[in-house]
Image (cartoon, rainbow, N blue to C red; front, side, top):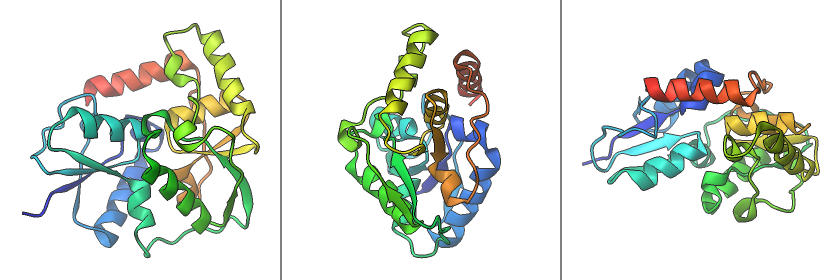
Length: 219
């Protein structure tokens, strides 16, 4: 039996740009395989048959779905797009950009490579920070609420300062907030692919995490 394939945009992207999930799902169905939308948060039982595959955007979703629930496997949207010839990549004409690799996929070299392959296909020149890939350092967000907000902001600035370029590619919505607070210009990979600007939106850490928790509780 062919495994069922689902696309889960993740809580953060659904809050950030809900219209994106529609565009991505439509692309996958036209250019990849039959794909169903899955909106249950990765912190809850996915309620899927064994053998199901979840395509994800969020690094946290990738880690939780693949490690917490038996019989469920994951693949990142970045790996899927990198495997296809049908995506219309925008041309950024040699724009120099650093990359911040998200903590939950620190050990997933396939995701790191796919992200960089996609940036290359968009004619973006990557200037790596010292700590990237498997040696990546947290953007700072994971320390909230374990540490006071002021100390979290200090860690965010430290991570942002380690980036050689002002423009920093991220593939986690919370990393958008962190790099913005740290003084850089975050560019979410899904925005780059769709030729859109990245909007930090709500970056007050308390309010942002309240938004996330409300979405998690409802999904």
